[in-house]
Amino acid sequence: FVWPGAMFNTNGTKQGGIFADVDFTNGIVNAPQFEPDVNNQPTAADIFGGTDAVPQGDVNLFVEDFKFPQVFRTSLGVAKTFGDGWNVSLDGIYTKTLNNIVYQSVNFENNFTSTPGPESRIQYVSNAAVDSRYRSIYVGYNTNEGHSFNFSTGVDKQFENFFGSLFYSYGDSYALNEGTSSQNSSQWRGQVHDVGGRNNPVFGRSDFSAGHRVVGTTAYKFDWNDEKNVATTVSLFYNGQSGTPFSWIVGGDDADNFSNENGSTSRNRTLFYIPQSRGDINLMDTDDLTADQQWALLNNFIENDDYLSDHRGEYAEKNSNRLPFESQLDVKVLQDFGLTLGDKRHRFQFSADIFNFGNLISKDWGTTWSTNDSFSYQTILNLQGFDTDGSPIYTFTDDSLDDERFNINDISSRWRAQIGFRYLFD
Image (cartoon, rainbow, N blue to C red; front, top):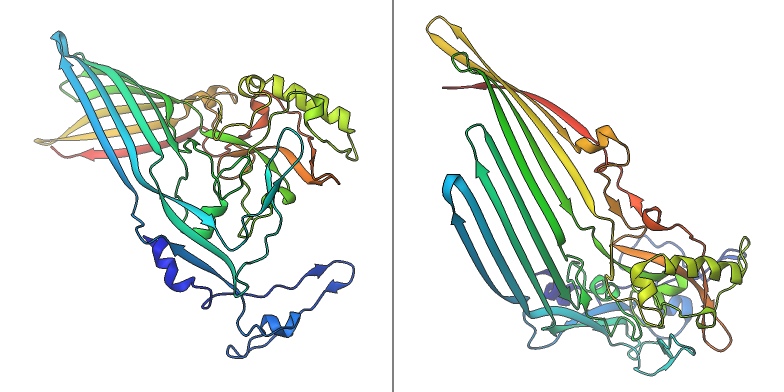
């Protein structure tokens, strides 16, 4: 794995940097001159004073007994064939996390206060480095929190010129951290959190929770002339599945580091607190909407979402919602025919496929969806800063309801067609 390998090249000395502040009124402040000599690069001392000889860098560490991800998995399946070619199956699988990866950023003091009001999120008093030789120090360790399961059942039948099958499955999975990034700093900044910041990620539904799925296939062959191998086969394939799970988060540049942490905070995962009433949230006027107008829109937005309306006064759970259910139908037509030349018979086959056939009929069918943010997160509020008492100040400007809240995936939502030709050897 690449994670522990980073301890060798991200050790605080091989990689580092110095940063110049930008003032758009007065230009770049304390900007160093370009130095082409790789052995004579500017240091923090050249800009900020002091005696630092080496630019600050990050450090990646792992606990001594760290273990690579491990799971326990068990499965059971039953299949039965009945008379006349009916086949029925039932399968189940359960997975328990034994060891997965989670992170903490440790190069700042664990001294914090809490924002006033019902949200009460922690905020660190200072994110200054405890060890000023380094910028951020990330420590990876293990967790055994997490599990998943999947259940499926189905039936299929072969007739003389017809085949049909129908299968259903349901799966769900839960995790503390997904462990999907190759960089340790990215793993830490991507940890989903509510009250306690990234160092205290929340356990919840995994990004890979499957949900419901229905798969159906059917094919019928029309034999027009057996001697000349003239036949037409029409096949249908249907796939319907639950949308991708997503979390409601707070957006805005200030939300990237809501808790004032030391570390790479460019990826925001701050879960949304669902206000019970107008007094639970501090909204500010925008150029277009007053705070009260925004509350009316936000309140209506919450009321139109089943999950949000049922969990007022709570933090939205990790991956609490799903994108709309997705359904697509594919159609395939095969045309076979034979040709006898001399003593030899030649067989040919033309094929035509239409993927997402429903979208060919209606622009509203066969749609697939994504959230308005990357990594399956949906921004509901933008953090604009903090009031004098430390309470967060928000704006809300999106009053889109139902499916209008999400983005349509242009490519996968369109119908597509392909044609083919084959020569079949006897």
